[in-house]
Length: 522
Image (cartoon, helix red, strand yellow):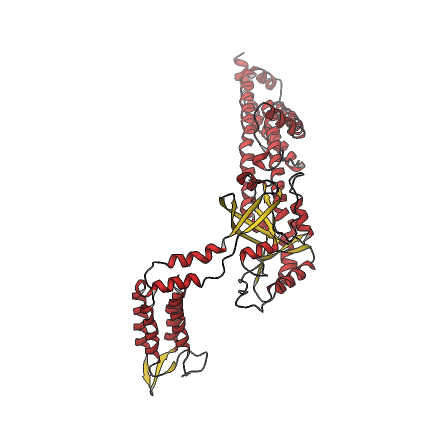
């Protein structure tokens, strides 16, 4: 009975703690993670090249339209990106999330994660930041400190140019490819009526499959310009022998046109590499300067769930990404976060922008792997701890077999006096039922007592110098607990059925014993 009670107690404690832990992780995730994220698939037009394009007008319209849908509590602009965090020369990669400080619900959700005395989330539009407790611990950051954030976009801008310096000319590294292209141009070109004719399908293959892919290489600007000029040169045909879209005919060019295409490709050999490397560096876009931000808040994070290392106001995030007035996406907070998939299917997708530039996904998709891992750990522990009751059941079976042997003569007497096999089975079965019933009840009682006094038990262990669940590591005080009645009932029934079945086998053996043989040995 003690084994059964212990097994029941341990199982319900573990299930309740893991249930509370899973719920707490979800709450932490939902406090700063969009319940549904609308993300712009295509990059925003470059503000320098398209100064007339109003990115803010586009995403504000999407934000406003989503706010009015059923099930949506609020919508706000979202920017997240990897950055480099510098604190007194200690530099490390960090994750940044920019929030619209004008969105009160978003600020309030972040404010709830900040413990009293650790500042606030009122960043406004200034150069301020809220960092996670893990980041603060890692860098030794306190309230009022200044941290420096470097944009990772600088690396993306500089690295290709630096990688090109000192490399051989494209005409040298891809000499065979270029020779093949020039040979194919000569092969597919024929002269008809004082014009050059090139099969449409052949030229399209040359254009899209041989020359255009060369632009994807990290090549110098002058080399890229030569390839662009070659492609544009091949586009300038005078006529075609078959109407579009029929590709069975020829493109017609002036005589000597294809020879000029080959001459353009030959210009790749004449690129001044040293001068071009210097020019490429000079022509790079403006480097995004780092931001010095004052830490006004430290929010409580946990190692068991992903969380941004630093929150910054929306304008700061836009400057660091160099996207002008654009954003990464529109984040939606829902009235019921666990109905995200339903809201997505019924409300969001039918009202998405018709330009096809936006996609949508739920928070459950983004965190599926993380939450699935917690669920798997809970299931594995449940199975492992169930063996306590399984071992108890086998022990009960062994004891009952021993009793059957010891009481062999008494069983023979009972059978001689007319006891039926069913009556003998019930005698042993009732013992198993009583063990399962009282063992389960005692286990449930002890389990509830442990859960109700869990913090006191942990404090007692801590006073002895043993703290199995330190708050500094977990990111929360104590252990979260959620009692679920259906889990308690399931554990009790599992223990009860195991104990009952454990006595059934010895009972069946006893009921089939030969009364004459049992009495003969008296």
